[in-house]
Image 1 (cartoon, rainbow, N blue to C red):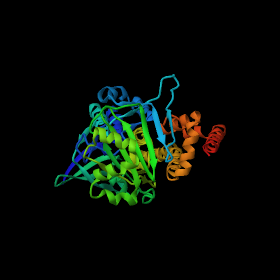
Image 2: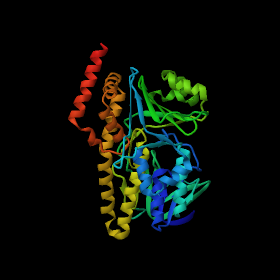
Image 3: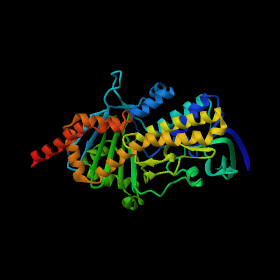
Image 4: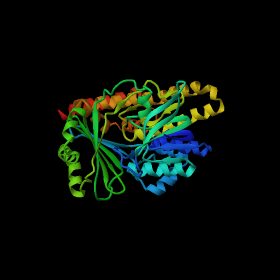
Length: 413
């Protein structure tokens, strides 16, 4: 068994791993990224990078370069359609300097590869086709990982490990850091239009019969995502492509676009979307991104949370560099700050999840939002990670929204 050494080993080359590697390599650290796939690779995702994530990329100093390289489609906001057909749409609004807040719609295979190139440009080393299967422990501390490279087993030793290996993190599992099995039993089926130019600057969400259909216009084509209860996942087994086409009958306007432009044959499936952790660290290792806890991100929040957790992890590693004896203190602080930032966002995600599972509630709520621009915009700013969810806790706004829900309903009857 061969051994490779690096100061910091990062497991996973997705947005959280690449962002952490980029920041650490800029500090002159010897950073090694281990990735099981070959890049570029497709990823089942909604392909949306919300304004908060764009701001994180700006703080990393790569937003302009990525924008030039990727030419992402601009997202000004979202349009939501309730089960009764009523819709509301709103924009993310403006920044403090008056400039419009915008997100990106960009295919993950392109976004992830471009961000990883930035990490390599900064000096990080990437090794592909490495399937990490275990961690190396010494006196209770993680000192590296073990991975398969073809038929060979490799040992990768380091002072510190960053687990950025996603929903089903091997690092998290091997260290017993998962809190429980998923309770939110949902599955996403993701496809892309084969042809056609993007139209519009809004992402779209439609809810019908316990299913949610997302549509995001890309530079060429579009992302079409379908979120279904996990008990329906057995229907996907024979052909995810045929399942997607058949299921879009509930969303005729999206199906019409698919028929006009065609659908790529590759249809991806992922889920479930509920992976809480007991804590996002152990001696010698930090978890970031989806590995550090995951709950059904909405309108691109997954990318934001990946980038933000990477930034906080880098701060913790910097603190350990200044004083190695304070590792537990720095890692515990990472846990507290990450939890404090994500807890209100996930509370909002749970409220949204509860509403989408109750058609009558969602329909009335959308009716109120259609006539309540102030609440709608605040909701978009919160889910776009440019405002704290607490900004939604304004009783005057909610009183207006409730009035709109009731008066609109009375008008319909």
